[in-house]
Image 1 (cartoon, rainbow, N blue to C red):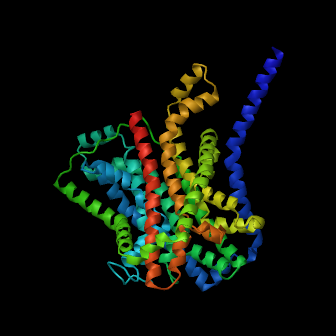
Image 2: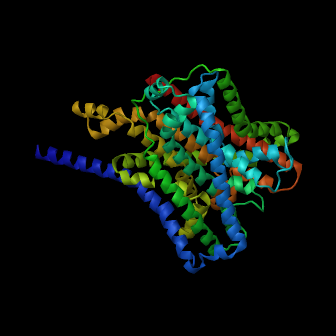
Image 3: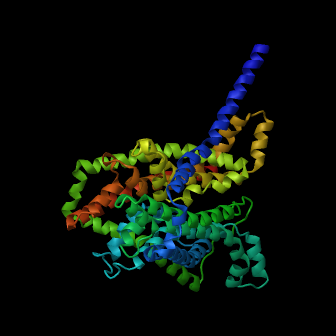
Length: 523
């Protein structure tokens, strides 16, 4: 009996150590992949040179433009996203469920796909207008295309948290639609919109692919300048100074987002106001909202498809070995990164669910752009430069916060009675996790996986820094063809961009379809 008791005690200790190791894995990962590389980068720079940005006219304009374009893009997405979300949430119309499911499609598009679609519309060979070259409008339009779904989705989630009885009470007291929006709906939406604004600002400020292709020489951002300093001039000192300034600004926005996100937990007991049949004026507003979505989010995708279909003989690029190798590398890197991102995302959500302070570092990968992370990794681990482990770790770093965010939000909203009932029936902690918590979190887990997978498929900046020539992906192959003069090379890039877009849509749709089936079966 004593031997059996000791064996049982040893088993419990082993299980506890394993659980603790898994829980602490995300913290160790962030330390090795983010904090240490950034610290190494700070060591390489001269503190006295930080004021160099303000003395150099070009650098000052670069920092100012990067901040201004992010602010303008955030304001435009807020101005357009709130009314679009209101009409989609409150008005019943045919195809509403499809619009709700497809609203995030532009966001899951790789940035390279978004940039190519916008060039197909307004570039040097644009289908609609060819006067936007070397202007700031291309980049601003690209930011709106990529981030408007984020704002619409946030506003929709905020509206879904408005209790129906409050709206009915306000209507009974004589409040019209506008008064109900200002007095009841807007206060409830504010935390969601504030968090979305911080997130959109970070995406616009630290975006690389859009700025590289759409900004040009005059309207490139800090991320593009950092890449050029490292890749073409090998000026690590000046690049490090710019990285510090970029991180300082994104750190402020990221911390605000982390604080605000605590106030945006779903309330499972809220009775949502069902969508209603629109009046004549509301039908007009709904039509304008759908047209706005078409112009801002669907037109670049349609233009890209049309240009690719019209590429003619350039479709022969699909018969070349380099194309199939790039496709294989893209899928291979995505699968490997998703396996790691799934483990990191769930463990981080479990840790954040237990310890509140861990929530504040959930969005640390969002604060450091891919260019900054890749630069820091090169300095911190020179012996592992262009290694597969470093590339996969970078992919996973940029992807797993999407999983953590959705899983943590769903976990916070689970009724505690489920776990308490399971423990009352004698279930152990691991049994509660496997047979109670995980099945309930599966839809959120798959939803986060969809966004994370789309991020890995279209990753561009980290691949440019950390990849080998033989590890060429679809994104780097597209960029290669864009860098070679000639109409055929441009058409080849369009064809490959269409293939990349279809791969991203396929992965996202499969995961979203599985999520929809699971949620339907639970209802």
